Image (cartoon, rainbow, N blue to C red; front, top):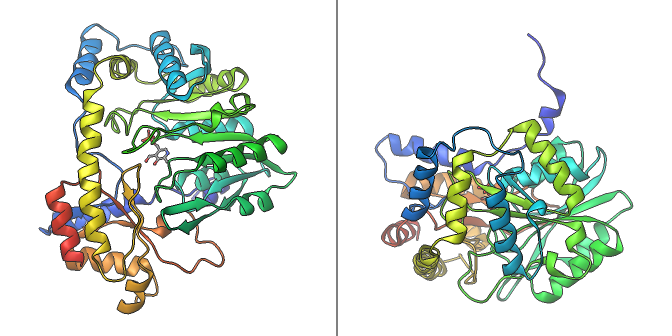
Length: 393
Ligand code: PLP
């Protein structure tokens, strides 16, 4: 038999999907499952957005369209993303893609040569590590340290990890899986390092508007940053459109042109009629965004209270995203689980609780001694949050 490509040995994946598969198999055997594993949303896309998508199909927007996206959507995105961040973008800065995920791969394809180093958050969205390594780079992790109100980026570690071979830093504020949010000082410090060492920055802003208090800020808005930053934007979380696959990169022109060329190579274009739904999402009524946040906030409050009532579990109340990342070290010690994965399997089989662990978010780092699980509350009703966490307790 012929061999497969060697580079596949370096390809990781989003292992949350394998947790989802295990949960589905358990459910298919007639068991109750409480799905806390995936950052998917069980709230439907707003009717005006669905209507716009249907109308676009009926109007015949079913053929190819320009590689970087239809001009009307690029314009709406430049306006919306720019005005919310205090940056001026033109439509030429916007490259529409099939969700936020492809922005990660294409950013790396555009800026990273094989053998170069890219800094990425760990624990973090697992595709960073996977794609850096798959494309021949070296994935250099940076961590977060626990604080009283959550987690803070380890700036000293970032500083110490930069070498002449470092090309880029991936920065995810507001963060999956730990729901960390940078302070203005942290953002400024990261920007300063990027400028000092002439690094590209991928600012993953998938959760920019998934927040319950305050207003988000983008690192791209800091002086000297717009010209070295690519923003990852997605409709997935803000508009409950995870399956529609719509997002974009907002990039300096030089990079936008490359991303557009990569789009043409890979997909020709993003699904044409979905792009018309994107215009409606941005320009139509916004009340569904707020009502979804209200629902998520209620779930967050219920989940936090119950998690903190479990002996040996501890979590600070996050102000953004829809994830809890409780420290479960003491509970693991008491229950005699040396690997948190064993606990997750036991939890599924004994209580129906399905969730990811720290291990699903990048390789465990040297010196790490705490155990964490991730609970996504975006796909489960409050009543089931109470039931599931009650059983887990
Ligand atoms: N970035 C982060 C931090 C995410 O959590 C996700 C999805 O969960 C993505 C990017 C990808 O989003 P999309 O579903 O739009 O591809």
